[in-house]
Amino acid sequence: MNSQRNEIEQQRSRTGQLLLLFSIILLALNMRSPITSVGPLTTMIQNDLQLSSAAAGALTAIPLLAFAILSPFASKLARAFGMERVLFSALLLLTMGLMLRPAGSAAGLFAGTILIGLAIALCNVLTPAVVKLNFPHKVGLMTGFYAMSMNLSGALASGFSIPMAALSSLGWRTSLGFWIIPAFAAILVWITQWRYIRNPLKAGQRTYQKTSLKGSMLAWKITAFMGIQSLLFYSLVAWLPDILHEQGLSVESAGWMLSIIQFTQLPFTFIVPIIADRMKNQQPLVILTVSFMAAGLSGILFAWTEWVILWVIMIGIAGGFAFSLAMMFFSLRTKTSFEAADLSGMAQSAGYLFAASGPALFGALHDTLNSWTVPMLLLIAAVMGLFIAGMDAAKEGYVTGRSYNRSAK
Image 1: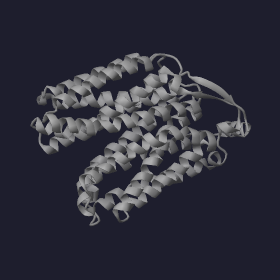
Image 2: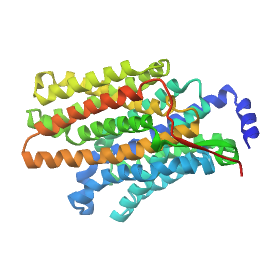
Image 3: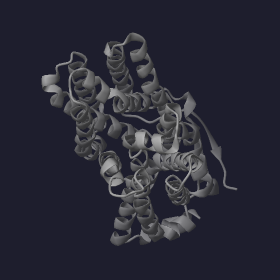
Image 4: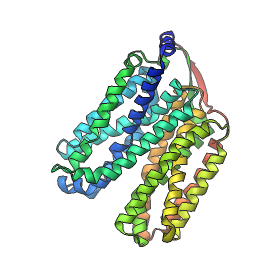
């Protein structure tokens, strides 16, 4: 198998490389839009299906919990069946979920949401590993392409959900159903990788080094970095418009500030991986990340609303830096693509579980204290945690842990 795969890799033409890149980009376009398209439509969905507030809120929480539950198993599936095969299966699962979600009842909506969460969990973990496997000398550039694609689709989905719902009498169903189109497009393009899907590289069919990352302090620092940057992002997505509205901005203006954050991230999710890949030590990038984030959050904490656009741009820059660095650490701090998948699964499982607690915690604190001051102070404290974890994660080196050999069967 290994020799067969090596032969296939040697035969990959420039066209084949471009098709693989296009496949990865289309995969990335489907990794955020199915989630971010829901938030603006929540009230419509709730009223149409007579859902409680808790049930409506679960539509956002379910994918995050799916990320946390399935992520540790993604690398195991890749070792057993091959990365390309698992990713193609995830795309099929995602498309099924996207078809179920707008089809009819509340049961279909939630069943589709679960399938979508499970599918994206696999893609989240394995995409960095596929990049490392197929583009070992262009990790930064390829990570930039897929990270920017992922965040672009997420930003567009949140911005266009309401306008698309207004185009049809079916309302939110049309808006959610639209995202079946890019999923089908991704499947069609991934079919060009069929010989790799049929003949994937499977770790179980050769001798390889399996590492338990639970004993690696560096792996835990990367996990902490991933979790804290996710918590900052999802907490701000959930509550920033409300915070700014209480500080005097209109509902519309407060919503636009969140959009500015997401669009500001885009160029940095492309540029930062390329820069990070050329550096042996990424600590300067961590320092920039923390400086921009702390400055932006402080401006909002002190309600300096006359400079609000500056604060949200700073937060957007910091978010682009933080997300990109988290993705790059999976490749830069591992020696093999399967080890990258292990680290990605560990970090994303614990990270998203940690992040899922953020919006609920900060909302509860606001309800109890009737103020956003303490939640904002906690976010700034989280930035300090991001700095501590990031400075160690950014040092040159590789994750280490308890290792053992597994022979070919």
